Image 1 (cartoon, rainbow, N blue to C red):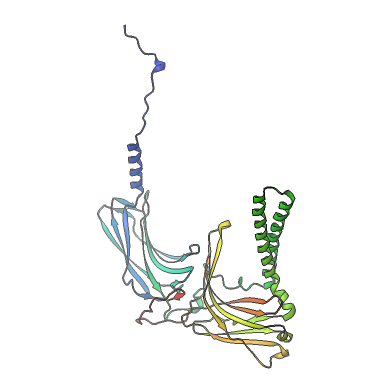
Image 2: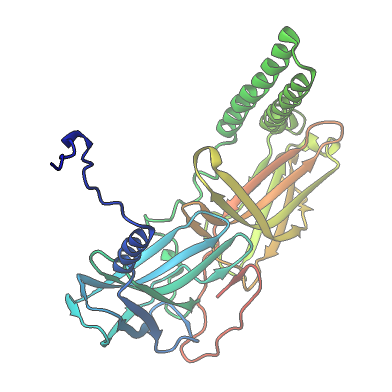
Length: 395
């Protein structure tokens, strides 16, 4: 008689997928998530330099690779920053009234037209770049949204409005925070200097108290010295100007309140007490255009600066100043191609004057005063486009 195998020995049937099955599964998943069409943005006049008030027109071309549903087709006029700093942008969106299904092999064309706003202008610098784009994106469910974009140049024109060039709530912060009272700035700087210096002293004391491994002690001592040096330099920077004014008296640096334009004259006045003549070696003023960008965030946040223009100003003493005070004045013309001031999140292009009063055997006086440069009226319609400039260029 044939004996049956006990049930306990029966092994349940399981399905173990092969490597080929895994490969096919992920390939199919990737294919379903991939873009099902391609988008090309084509401008009617891609080589032209546009100016505020011009119309940017063109077409969005859609080539369909496989059947897909499009929930929305969006076209945007946008400026973007790129370079060393974090990304910032300003966007104006045009929704093309399309919603439906595209069939494989189809080609569709959708026209668009935008009015160029009042700025910012195209700018290519060292750490900071600002460019304009027309961007298109199709909202495809369960797939990567296909995108396309085309860049173009924006510069000054006859419809440029200097008063509103950077006067928007989105990315204009003015100069109020940069012209904050020096006492408040000095107080914050001194406080953080004490924190850094105190931490350095604490590290050094811990080494002396605990001893320990020689190598580790040396490394900790070097770290403590670094913190101590940073803290000391911050505290010195905070008290430098107050100490300098103990000898010089009140130092006043005056720049015009009104906005300046490329080619305008910049008047600078430095006023010191009468007794300061005997206490200074030299007083200098320097015109600067500075890129300031921030990369990263939190503990990885870093600030990068580059002075793309540095021009010394000729300070001359004015005779017959009231009260016998020492008044130094300079009048300097801004470059005709001066880039307009630019303020966006983590990306700035700043104009300033740095004043340095050298006091022998005593802390020097240093101050930075910021001012705004906005565009003047540029070329009219039909004029020849300017050639591309190098770093620091503005259109």
